[in-house]
Length: 145
Image 1 (tube, rainbow, N blue to C red):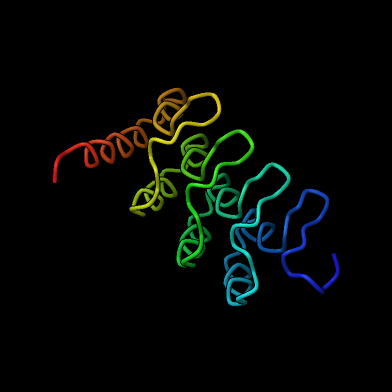
Image 2 (image 1 turned 120 degrees about the vertical axis):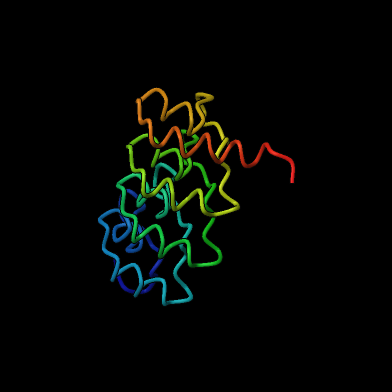
């Protein structure tokens, strides 16, 4: 990949940060995010961000670390319209769902390209605890302040 551009991706457009997030390497993620020039939202060939990759694999620690970086965008969809919350719901990663739902800016009702929301994905896969978490968030946002 060369050392001249820390945001340059490989054949799949995985950057060093994307690989570290995908594999759950918290220490490497911290080191990379310590460099200002690292783009934490750089998408891969399928438009998945490092946050999506970490959420997809259930790497709670990496998700927390990424969300500490102010410019991380938690609602960026991949090619199929899946956001990090959708990936976590799809794969039954309850801890990641909980972490993402704690972020006010996370859109828990954002549908993917097939019109499936994180809730409908969790229902389809019978992840009862994730369904409860998502329904709880929906009730919070629906109730008047």
